[in-house]
Image 1: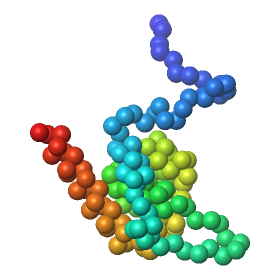
Image 2 (image 1 turned 90 degrees about the vertical axis):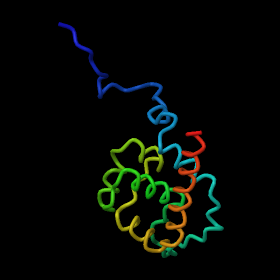
Image 3 (image 1 turned 135 degrees about the vertical axis):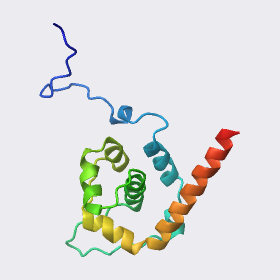
Image 4 (image 1 turned 180 degrees about the horizontal axis):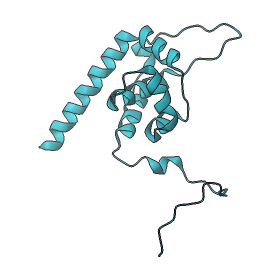
Length: 137
């Protein structure tokens, strides 16, 4: 009897597939990506910590916003779980460019930028509501 077989995981690929192919058009991750691209992050006044000269550089605000918004849509409340999902969830991997901030970085970003994040969540919700109303006409 014949079965459909998957690809050999150990097989090297000469021309790898584009990761962009895994995220289909209309996926919420693509909407979040476009929304964050259109933001003026300087105007929103996101705060950032100043790392010491020997410390690790911080993650870009846009990356953290994308991670936080997608985690909200996936109903992930725990920062530790969000960190774990950022390594295995295709949408999060695509959004963050394969970055996986640890839970302390995610928590510190939220703690330092509560007002700006509240504004962004309200703004994104209003945008989605207005799109839903315009599409239902």
